Image 1 (spheres, rainbow, N blue to C red):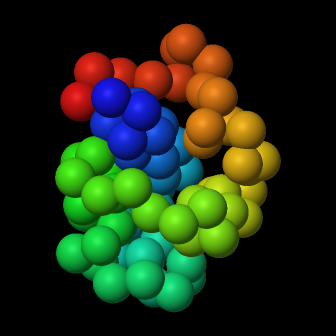
Image 2 (tube, helix red, strand yellow):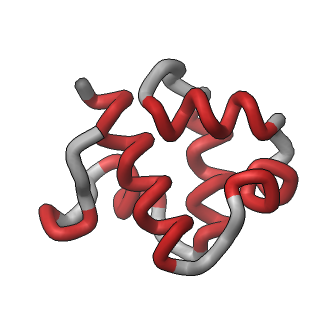
Length: 75
């Protein structure tokens, strides 16, 4: 469940910033397919990967791991 929540939060933040999935993946140093799996909740990335994603989105790690209720969506 937590994987899906974190992945959905990443997707919501990314889309709100108008960033393409492939662009965020490249900037975070991961493949687009891995980013897709993260957003779908199919994979739990390493904490360092989540930190790089958060950095590229311009948010704190907490914004992804403990999102505000309005930032989450049902996956």
